[in-house]
Amino acid sequence: MQPHYDLLIVGGGVLGAFHAYHALQKGLRVAILEKDQLPQGSSVQNFGQIVPSGMDAKWQLYGRKSLEIYKSIQANVDISLRQNGSVYIASDEEEMTLLEELATINKANDYPSQLLTANDCLQRYEGLRADYCRGGLFFPEEITLEPRVALHRILAFLTEQKGLHYFPQTLAIGIDSSATGCRVVASDKRVFQADQVLVCNGYEFQTLFPEIYREGDLQAVKLQMILLEQQPAQRIPGSILTGLSIRRYESFQECPSYQSIKAKEDPDSLSKKWSVHILFKQTADGAIILGDSHEYADIFDKESLRIEIKTAINEYMMEEATKIFNLQTWNIRETWVGMYTQCKNSDVFQRKIDDRIHLLTGIGGKGMTGSAGFSYENINHILGK
Image 1 (spheres, helix red, strand yellow):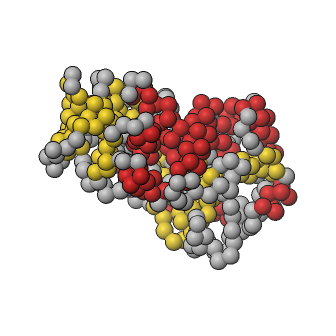
Image 2 (cartoon, one colour):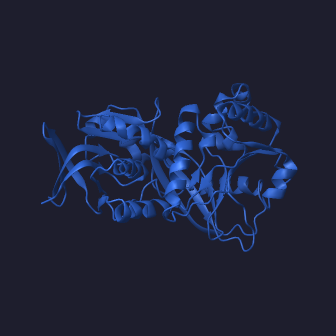
Image 3 (tube, one colour):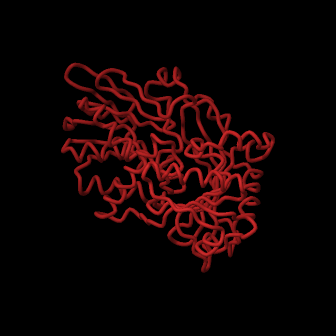
């Protein structure tokens, strides 16, 4: 007979894992049901860049809390964390203006950042092209993780050291509640009991409460990413975000000059067509993750995005990347498609079925950076504290 849990979480991605972490920190009995052996979705299909610097004021606070939490976990177990900072590289005077304005905002928000000259950037980042770089803005507190191992190690840490009950390859197909608690039925006929249930379903909407998701404003986002071969001797520390990132990320939308600068952009450019911005992140073994693009569809029409990789998008991203860095090798090890969900008109999708069943998804591209800090606050709402 299964034990009765204080909190049962459906979905072991980063949102589910960190809600479990904070509940366990409170001394609660917690279980996660994960449909795969280990999570395979957007929580492991990303860059592994933890960059509060790119978020709006609300989510930057969550991201900064996430930095504390990741570093605290790293002190107990190696989750592949490296603190080499993040840098935004401006390619023209407009982007440099936005970096200067964001530096002023950061100072008011007490978030450390440092303006860099073009020469500073060229000295710090081997292979950065002088004809691209006009200067940079550096965030020393920010970190990187290895996306294909970090979450899996966090789940192992929670299971082995914090008492998490982790049930892999367990698909939840039904949830109901009563005055005494919740009943969760798995596809293998096992039944789990809990006081509270949190469903962190990522981009899977057909199994549990599809009618609720259909009424929301969720959309699916398809991303294309490239992994280049190991650079023989070239080392590029931290997260490298470039001019198109400056023109895209929410934090820059709070800059005084942002709207006037955006108004001058070419609406017919390929970067607009495919919502491309160019990021670089070197993995621990010296390979380079490069990307990414964004294509959008309704969550119940995900198939319209198709899972195939569009060669034209990858060719465009590679072409733009060569304008920014001189790498020792541009050989491609692999390419892949990622998927996440986001809301059209809000920052995250949250619904209460009743006082015991909670739905949470649609965190968009904020997941790896924001989930740990957001969950720290949100767990109290779920538990009614």
